[in-house]
Length: 164
Length: 284
Length: 104
Image 1 (cartoon, rainbow over the protein chains, first blue to last red):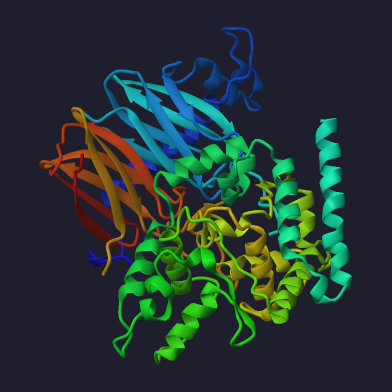
Image 2 (image 1 turned 180 degrees about the vertical axis):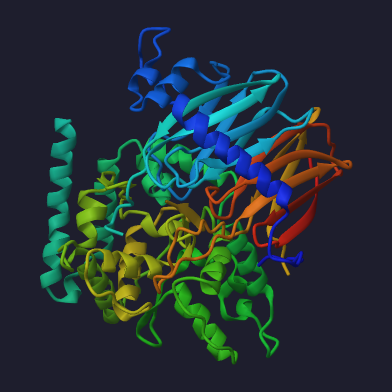
């Protein structure tokens, strides 16, 4: 039961909404397309670009955004979610001066799931629980020293058992 | 593993007399032998699982599921229900008495003795039934079963019994034996369009997948109740699981606290004697 | 009214480990009720943690965060007995605040 002070009016604060929308837009344009769980291909081979259906997407993938790949992000998600309603996600990173950690689920109705702002002095690590509509990559994006890094892992989401 | 298969066959055969016993008069029933066979079979199915872990259902028999569960248990989702249950349990009724007055030891640390057979009324009394009888005896309206406040009170009472092994008694009374037999018969009887018995999934297929879920062994399965099931997004009692499980094999479920379900709970709990209470619990 | 916010904050060395569980439906707006009507979206948008007058953690959430959401993080500073203020606001303008004591 929430003790709530209604702030009155019918629209939430515009700045927060704008931030979320901006992130969502960025997410849908860049993240889902260029950061996928990596299969083993020859190093340097732009696999994503070659798998794109449309020319625009292929070019985007090939030229890349400012996303850097890194092995310095640890993304901990289950291989098979026991329930798509509650999927535990943990992210830690050894990248320096991390200002935010963002999580996207490309196959969810809205790609952006959560974003965490980490001021100076806050550890670059976060754990939370997400909803996943269906099998999808989970994408972790870390902003560090003005650059943006990402890593992705697939999570299988199946129907619950018991014919439910 | 061949030895394992032989072992299982041997134990299944040993359990047969228990099944055959169903067709005889209740006087020939031997619950203690049934319980022993039931436990031995489950232990042989999952030899690496310690006794106490059988109260953790699917997580005892599947490692990746267990990891997700351990992460969620860092801050269990039933925390709110637990607080609600404790507050409700401690709050006196309008007449000044409280739940503690209806139970031994003021209701603390006794969940593992439920259900019990009430020789005075000749029926199986579950914790939920006892809670509502307590309310009615003190001028309060009974709570709806399956979820909500009754599940929260269950959660609090279970928490006070965490770690205590199931200790269900069958008194030397033909009615108690008959109730036990009824519960046992229910457990092994196929029902519904899918024609499954409880045993089909929770004994024969225990540890295997049913779509995305891992089937928990029947041995110890009630120890974690009430549960916060992610699927429900809320707490649920044993009744809730019995009714939904029956619906899911496409049979018409009985009403909560129907004699059939109370007898089933009696049988299942007795079979799990020795398994420590792990409730309240969290499940997928 | 009981708070919707549960916090466990433990001082460990020179930092504080924080875990929080918030009671909130986090309705996505995609789920139907038993009458077949869509349950409108109702989810926490912003969650903040403050220590010593400074915001140490901000969560920007959307409907994809699980019901009764959980979060875990750590920040430098904080000692046993300090206050940790937790506040959230949701998309319907509701909010809640709680002050927890750091233990350890």
